[in-house]
Length: 449
Image (cartoon, rainbow, N blue to C red; front, top):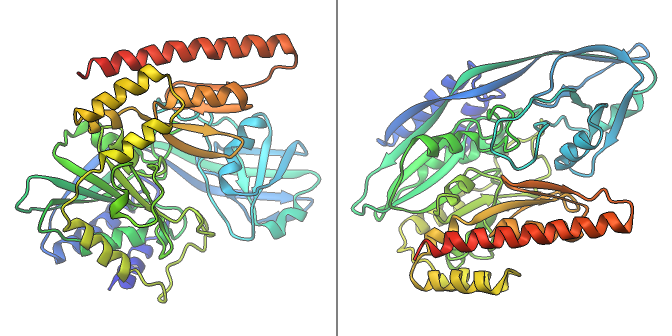
């Protein structure tokens, strides 16, 4: 049944938010829920639709198969001024795209086609930003040898405002408390692990204890009008336009395999064995966390075919244990372990007065209010986004010693100093900012008493 559902959804092909095909896949998802007698709703949402309409790369008379990175603008040029980059992992793309912002770039990782959204403006910002000005392409590794000499790069791409659709199915229960379980139906290539298997799992979930909200979001992969938070756009605007309350927790299924890990907000670890006690910024659950709701993201970050043309679910993959486990959780009396967040706060290198006030708030059961202080930091030395309580302080501390750090909805720090005087002044500036931000956090915390 599960395998058949995935293949039914996969037949629609690649779905970009706002695609004409999106309503067809949404209608099929709605049908899955209605077969289980679950009340289902569809919500339209404005999105930015991007489409690669035509593409051609030809070098010295030889054509090379390629895909454009999403949000690439159109181009038609013959040139020798381009740069070929062999990646270690896909998430390096925007590191190089920003480093060589005036170059036409050709990326490759392996012999599978892959896609990754280009970002032009300040990273980790929710604001709309300027579109990418230069396209970037991806070719298979075996074809890199043919990218040489004078090449013609032709791309006809399309940008337009369109409408995406989010599906929400609601199962009532005795309790007024709610649990949200989310997935997303937009996807690159076949997208069967990311994220059609998750969409297919949703109708199998049930609870006698909690009102269940089972959601398949639009615009998780792209759609946010060039915001550098290009992902989780559908959930961001869903929460902006809809008041929710009484939510016990949110579980996000995103890029799921039988080897997926659990990334949890401190307070929930005891329910999820071998979990990583840190919420993930890479899924729809993160937007719920910013509202003070504890989250769990189930994802396989080491899945080798991420965003590739061979993201295919096989019959021998067994997701029954995951479904059984989720239904067990959804029928458990979930109690937040405040000690976990307390220990997390104690481990942070933040000003002692800030730590004391935060711990006092926790003693007064302000757990959900403290979760609103979570944010993201991108350290380019690791190319990984990590989440922290009081993230601006942690980010500034990293910026003090690291060469490049981006801090969510705040600032980017690039250490370009070439002499001792410059470095000394840079550190003075960061130290000053640390004091300002610490006082800002302290004032917000004290207002919660």
